[in-house]
Every structure is written in C-alpha cells, then in structure tokens.
Amino acid sequence: MTAASPPEILRAPLVVEFPFTRSLGPVQSAFLTGLREGTVLGVKTSDGKVMVPPVEYDPVTAEEIRELVEVGATGTVTTWAWNDRPRSQQPLDTPFAWVLVRLDGADTALLHALDAPGPDAVRTGMRVRVRWAAERIGAITDIACFEPYDGPAGGEAVPHDGDFADAVTGIVAEARLDYVYSPGRAQTAYIAALSERRTVGERCPSCHKVYVPPRGACPTCGVATTDRVEVGPAGTVTTYCIVNIKAKNLDIEVPYVYAHIALDGAGLALHGRIGGIPYDQVRMGLRVEPVWTEGGRHPDHYRPTGEPDADYDAYKELI
Image 1 (cartoon, rainbow, N blue to C red):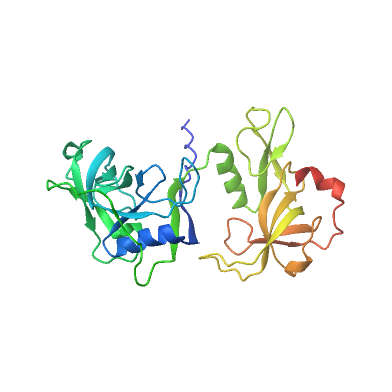
Image 2 (tube, helix red, strand yellow; image 1 turned 180 degrees about the vertical axis):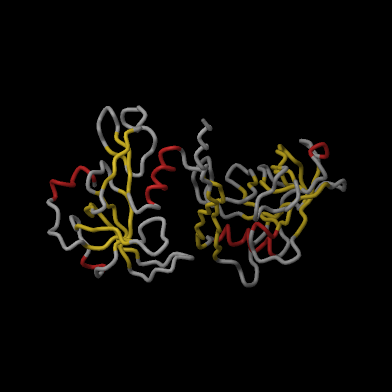
C-alpha cells in the first residue's frame, strides 16, 4: 500500500486597504505645513511642556492649546527597535531602526526611522538629526528619516506664529495591511466544496448549529466540529445594506445591495451581493439563490428565486 498524499495547503496573498481622508485643524495644519518648509513645530501645554508631534488638547487638563513653538531638527534617541525586514511603503527599503527621538527643545518623543548600518550602531542616548526628503508635500514623510549626528545640540523652543503660505489643510492616510492567509482544515474543505458549486458547513455535536463558513470549532460550545453538512443552495435575506460608494478595484456599479443570507439548513448567515432585482426592491425575507460565473470558485451574487418571502419567524434568530 502507498501512503495517501497529504492535503493541499492553501495559501493566498491578501491586501486590506482603506484610504482615509481627513481635514486638519490649525495645529496639525501648521505642523505638516512646517515640515514641508523644513521647520519642526510643537505645541506648549499649560504647564510649559513642549509636545512634538503637537496635539490640539492638553492631555492633562483637556484644555484647547494653540501656542506653537519651533524646536530643533536634532535630538536624542530615547528608545529603539531594529527592523531587519522592511515592509513595503516603510520609510527605508534597507534594514533600519525604529526610534523615539526627543528633539532639542521638546519634552516628548517623535517616532520615526533611523538610518544606521546595523543594530550595533544604535543606542539609547545617541544624537541624531532629521534627514529631509528631497521633495516635501506637507506630510510626516517629509522627514525621510533620522541619521546619526555628532554636532552641537539645538537651543530652547522658540515661539512661532504657525503662518505659512499655502497651508496644508487635509491629508489622505493610506491604511494598508498585506498578509498571506492559509485556511485551516474546515475552511479548506469549505473552499474545495465551493469549487464544485456546493456549500458545505460543519455541525456542532453539542448545540447542533451548522456553521457556514465552518470554523473548525463551535465558538459557543468550544468543541470541535467535524460533521460536514451541505446547505442551501437557496437561502433567505435576513438583513442588508445599500452600497452607494464605489470601492477601489471593484467593478460593480453603485448602488448595489450587500446582504446577510441564511442558506437553508445553516445556523448563521453569510455575506453575499444581491443581483437580478432593483436595489430598492430588496427586502428582509427575500428568497434568493446563488449565481455562478463560468470558472468561478464561489457565487458571483445571489438572485431572487421567485418564491414567496420567508416568514419573519423563520429567520429572526439569524439576523
């Protein structure tokens, strides 16, 4: 007899990103505009402490603070950690140290990158200075990084009016997470069944709830789920939302409906897009079925079956 081949280990690179657009108040506007102009600004609290980066409200008294001061572009490392594998869009593409730097004239520390040849070249208390970016736009990245410095220390913080021409009034913060996802035993079986146009969940041996997608264990009872159960293909819309903002890299015209769908036989609802019906006619209780595209490994969307709507009592526990 020959040994059975081990199951294929599934892996997929995934990216979660969200470009967050925000407006700036007078303090943050002055800080970022100052960076564009090669000036580092902080703010002075009611007890005389200078905070860099600046905040708009005193962390002790919660009072609004607006007294801007200019601090030095040199400072002292207060603590650090070595990063030997820089990720995409980090400040440097070669190994570097994350450092907290207390700039001369400031009482708090600023987090940024330090360009150093190795961890042996970094220490708490070392002197550093700002390395400005070649092109500055009014963002924290205008500080390209810090670099070692053996020159004289800067002076005390000096008052600054915060006035600059063409002030920066808003920013777009690109939140992004890149990772490799590998499903476990239960979800691997679920994905394999989808490729055969079947939806398979797992039943808890204790409470008998059928989880779709399966999780490998019942989160309520804490026991393993190994009994596989095919559900659907039809189901019931339990609740839904109308999407009016077009997502990046998603070729679906707005508005469209995204719903929770309780497949027949399932113990909880899964997510799916509703098509084949005007968005303003989608409703709770609507009976739907999956629509598969040629070569698709999962349903493209769900459409009405033409059946009468489900009674509310039949799905109220699945909302």
